[in-house]
Image (cartoon, rainbow over all chains, first blue to last red; front, side, top):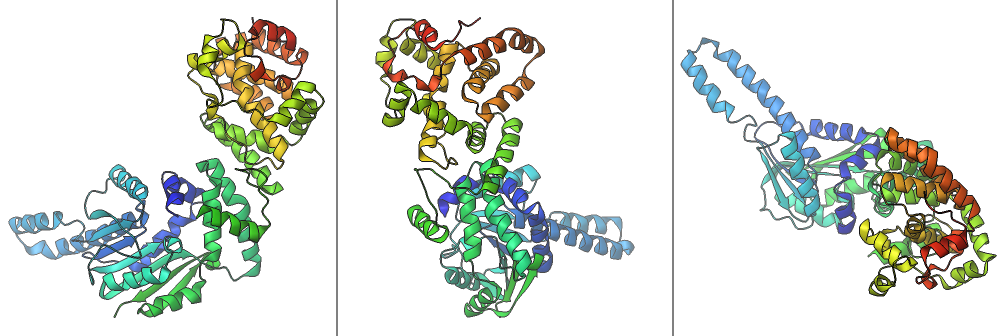
Length: 261
Length: 239
């Protein structure tokens, strides 16, 4: 699996856009909206490689923070200029409101691309990049408010271990969110989806990334991944409560959610 | 890990890998690959792998034709039997360099060094569904640099286009035809004029007049003077 992602790292984003016709951006937006993070949240994004979820998280938290600050300023209309200036300065250094995201990935190349993207897009604060394995996370227990894994869990050899680790590093009250390809139940759509996956995607991989085999592997790994209900049970087995899933695009993709209580 | 993957795939889909590196493809996939590689090769001329893929996916008529030409010729037949490969590891570069000026070997090495190219950068075939035809296209690729030498053309855009015209006439490979027709798009007006008035007519005439260039066992002819080989094949002297 490691070698697949080494060669795939640089062209990852281009391939994602081509394979999903850009829809993956919408899926990731929906994930962060569902998360609905408030400023001060500590997020762990596992298999976060090129930073897609992390950047969306920061954008979301920033806009929530801005609205908070605006509301605060409105309430301060009766204060003197001195007092307003002071409180404004205090908050200005906190455009993220102490929110932080740790991006963890097993692949150095993906992290490198992520860091470059962050620099290029102007994300400077609230981000850290850590090399680590989802089955054995380099973090203490009860640390994070939210754990996300977007399109990463199907590449983990022992999903049960990854889920256990997710449980361990989350604070009580913390939320587990998983965005992943899942199973399409509608038979007509399923056949079209299979046709597209097996006929078109490896071709795209060859033409865009010069790599047929990696994308053949990706398509096959999606088929082998547990369907929605089975994944739900696995998440429950790890100790999570209120486990639920939401199908996007008829089950092509699903968001699973659970809480550590 | 990868071997296990291949075995699993073979069981699941009745995969038949005919040669190392072979990726079996459905007709739909070939069509998509041909279209995609053509677009990508035009968009990014540095994607030599796309030119290779285009050649493989569109060569279904031309390649058997070439193979038959080789089969019916004594030297070509031997090449198909013995399957020689032109690679840095098999070539004795110092020996070739020591050959007299004007000999095929000396001029070939000179060409490689002047243009800073190597025979080892040719893509191995992936999408040809016949093991012998895969060799034919491999041989065509490895002999390409020798074409440059015989035609006296450098590896800049102009030189490549001229060689493509020659190869298009010689092999009938759609990829060569496309390359020959679309390559000039990126040339300046001045070069286009030289191309159209002198080089292309010469390349076409030579290509039509010459016997099949794949029927020459180049590895046995390093000592032969380039001019003599040109005459033997029927390539007219370059302008």
